[in-house]
Length: 194
Image (tube, rainbow, N blue to C red; front, top):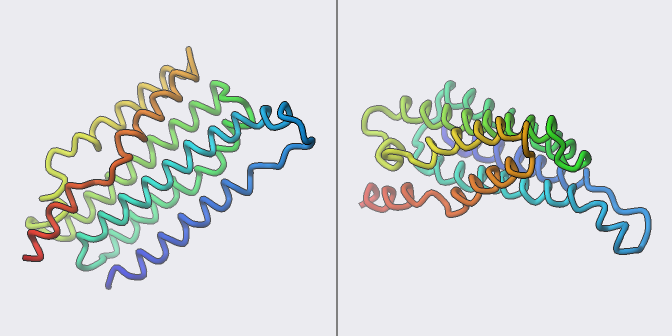
């Protein structure tokens, strides 16, 4: 099977996730600055989650450039990733509505950790399906980003018990690490095409 349907389906799901997140933000009841200020935690949690969903979309797009054919395993691994991404609107809203309280911030971190794990599973599944000369395997190399991210998520989940704000800083740190698209794939594709 070609990768076009997988890309189209994934793009559609991710677009819906972003739409749901923005629709969860309610308009303030009142026209004063104070009315808007009360929504700041909701807006900040939305910005962080929007950034994460955008990062997943961007890196997913890059990763799929290395895929020649899609196997059943790749389809299921992709659905596993989309499942965890689909929980972003729920945890984002819960965390923002409760002003970054401990339990919502912890669950947010668990969903981030599981999405990272699912991305890793998809990556491994693609590598296995493409064989020992997989472009993706050549591109990721030691994958320091992929290894440090889950450790930072686990640290943030633990730290949430003492300081949900420190956990938010760790969540934002991981997002900043991934902000630049995965250039490793961009470097391998031109060489492979030549």
